[in-house]
Amino acid sequence: MNTSFKQLIPMLRFLWSHAPQRLKYLVMALALVAGLSRDWVMMVVNKAAASPVSETISHWLPMFALTFVTVILSTFFYQVITTVVTTHVINNVRLQLIGGLLKAQPSFLDKREHGAIYHILTSDVSAVAGFTTTFLNMMPAIIFLTIAIPQVFYYSALAGFFALLVMVGGSLAYHLQQKTMARLNDDARALEVAYFERVSEMLKGFRELRLHGGRRQSFSRDLGNVLERLRQLLIKVNRIYETGESAVHGLKFLLLAGIVFLVPYLVKTESVVTFQLLTLVLFSLTPFEQLVTSYPSVIGTLVSFLRIDDLARELAEIQRISGNASTLTMADRAPPFRKITLRDVETRYQSRETSSFALGPLDFELRRGEVIFLVGSNGSGKTTFMNVLTGLLEPTAGTIELDGRRVGPEDMDAYRAQFSAIFTQFHVFRQLYGLEGVTPDEADEMIDKVHLSGITSIRAEGISRLDLSAGQRRRLALAVALLEDRNVLVLDEFVADQDPEKRDYFFRTLLPWLRQQGKTVVVSTHDLAWLDCCDRVISFENGRMTEQVQAPLVHAAS
Image (cartoon, rainbow, N blue to C red):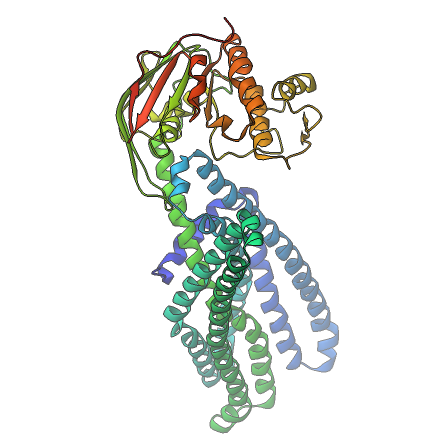
């Protein structure tokens, strides 16, 4: 990634835009007070050194006490407010990025490494927001040096020249390493992403690793190799950093030696002036080191900022395309519909783990109250079609209509409120997000409907138990979907991991009950023994659909 200090200004603007409005100018004022008060302490010390003892005690000592208290208090409050601002920036950036991700389609995440997204939301955001602290801590140092350096020139032009030489040399020591540091930081981040990916794989495939010793050892070697490469890279980064540090320390001691030995030798200098110069330089060394040694962290922060900025731009573009306003009513439970129509719809599904799959063109109409079965082999297009139908995958051509009205990108949130869905890959949240108003009686009724009474329960504080078998977890997901009480229920291979008794219950009892509740149900299945339980059968092959014109219309409820 091409990193340069040209991105520093955009990063500062980015941080400024996410800082709390009421504290922005307060922290600037405190930075000014903290920097100027340190300068004042330094000047008081120098004046006292050149004054008679009586004047030092009567005048400069009280002045020193006042400025000392000012430095301590201003620095304390400045650091506290800096922490408040930094934590506020972290939360704001994370919430903005997560909010953008929640508005994106699932395909947006399917095309990206989840480890990279995780790294951006954790390490990268912390690094960039942490630069808020770095920058705010630099401000008093900059203010101090702005006043201190001219004073060095005032006492001795030669000493001022030496001081500037040290500052330029120290900055140059880091600047010459900028490209190398930027590349190494980028490489380190890539290895950290690789580590996150492997940890995620370990947690998902833990049983497979425990079952197969060879796989476990091979995985451990691969993980160890990633961590070793990361370790060696961090050592290399530290070696380069310490080279710059050593150069700065060497120049610093040369400056002190120059003031004590060289300046008095070249230019006649009184001892009191030498003392004053040493005071100025010693006061200046700490803020100068603070500025120069922050150089490598700034380079690493710029790498993180570019990652955040790229993600934020992509998410902003998604939001721009989808729009902010909806012409349909936004609701958790959309009003009943008469029909949903797909006209000449085509789409292409792509992810980083699977090859591209094309669906369509296809025409389809879903009428209120229907039970529709989708059949076809694996990879025929059933799941992709369900994603398009529910608004989770954008058509690349064609239109979706709700009661004859075209559903545009700005209407998708309202359109999706028609659906509850349980896909082959699904997740059950422990907390009832969006269902906080569900009563215990309603929850118990749905738990009983899916035959999970006495096994788990749903309450306002969350689901009591999630460590269930695959079939039980799928039925628990169905209970949550039923509590959503939406118009259309989409079920992808729901009975695949249910025993024969539960399959019979689902097709012969639960589907008729859903029909009685006025629900529209779309079910994909490989089990063709239950085709008499639906109104229509849609067959898929190679991304195309055909309707079985002689689908049985006999229902268990009749």
